[in-house]
Length: 446
Ligand code: 2M8
Image 1: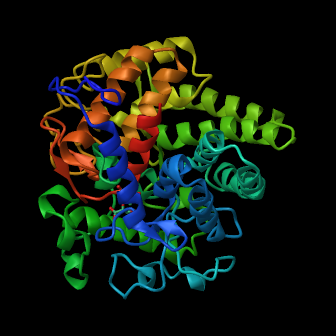
Image 2: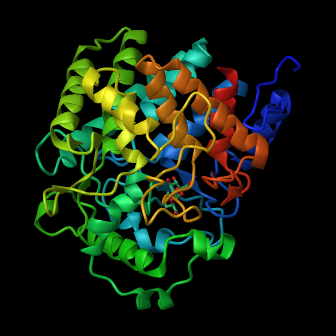
């Protein structure tokens, strides 16, 4: 085997330099003046957690773009501290993405930026991304960018802690499946079933996703009707977070979102120390999030973390990859780490030193596992990347190496796709996807 090659699932060498070139070319092609689009066709605007993952990748090749990426996103931060999940590019034609600015109407709300945005958030992985970008390129320009971003990252956390702790239990509540980032995960089936909507309303709209991707891989019209009903409820409430418990149709505490929320405090503690500020308050908050996650979302019966539906105050039944995300918390107690490692290694998720199939997003033994429909089975690099970080954090380097190899294998076999078939590794969704390229660069550099 030549230098710069790794053994793959099929035993052949992988051209790592070629993969790196492909990743850089993909990021370059998706670069748009001050940010990177997830996909030119499916997602042509700026997405919040995509930008965080993408910044991690840019730090390897063009650190100035990593900082531009995060800076442009935080320029769209609302006065209340929320970082919107979509920042719309005004240069694009109306209808370039559905639902567009005309549905969100952010300009009607006080305290919103001059550009159009959505009113939802996504998992707060940005502080972690900023820290990793700086560690990768620790130069004066990076430190200056970190200094500028720090107050905005703190405000993002404050918004979540103060406005979104609907149950008052120390955890953040998501008000829409889109906030989880795993839009149509089976984890949301129970809470979504309670949302009143009729698929027929979709006749009045033109879905953009199904024009660019196979409809059989995307959420159904009934899912979309419910997504829109939840957006309308939140928007018509002025995107205000008071009184959510009284009638908002979707209120869920998600283990991945809250793990990211806790990991952000750990990252902010390190950023504060780099900037000569006091990290203590971040550490205290991080401890509290871990404690609340364990108390409220760990299910001793299944040995994994499950989302809590606040409308029924019950943990949802579906065992999804969301449950493994708390591994990214360095202070997760050892017995919970052991339980999650067992869950990851089980036939449900198949993490191993040598993986014969990629990490799925849903329990592959479940009767409703779907190999093609997005977030209901397929494999995604951002999730594998987070789980791998967790395995490294908790001293499981061999499993982490297996996961890394399997992710590199996926891109070597299919290119920088949005997601991958969980059995065959075939590329699915957008073929030139931002975070796949970015996180591949990060994996290759390790
Ligand atoms: C997907 O979500 C958007 C809505 O936000 C969509 O389906 O149109 C998800 O995969 C989400 O996690 C991701 O951030 C976004 C852009 O890549 O696409």
